[in-house]
Image (cartoon, rainbow, N blue to C red; front, top):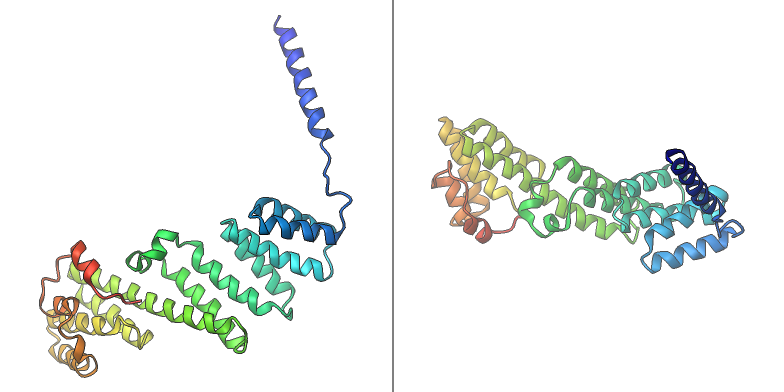
Length: 275
């Protein structure tokens, strides 16, 4: 009885395998042009897995020529739209290395920056600057450098202006990240580390909205350390350059408040955005 069951099982497996082997790839006879057109159609319909399948086959069967170049660029975008950001980033890198003189190379650099930025930042974080400032700064810095390449190498590109705006946003975001870390050190009583992070905001991100807050934080940190000259210098620069912000609740918190306490939810919501 057991032997009969095994035989029947093997027979069933053989039938399934035979059916599987009998399935033919309907694209076998397709030309490069047909693969490209069908991939485009699937992309436009939002069927990204099928589009990527056709684009991959085009690249495997017809690896040379303009259609292959465009298919590689399209494949990177397909991965991006499908949420496969690691694959998208790698494919844009491949395109940049393989076709450095391509007419759309500026677009490839630009999209690589977009993908790098969004790779580790989910939608909720993008809508919440507080969460964004706590994102891994290496990811933000890499995206900044990708956009800088577009601006530096292709200043007349149609993507250059948007890349500049994204760089400004990322610069402000990186500055706020430094301020968040400095605030953490302040609450822990690590005043020297807090002051150093505040100085990073000023020296590395001049013009960022976080600068006056960093100066206020440095004023208090140096005061707690007994470094009155440095504290007075920081406060003087704050008052000289940001007189209108002196009464900002967050700045007053650094200058005169209980720096061991973390801001409550209402204070975070009411605080001025630094992006």
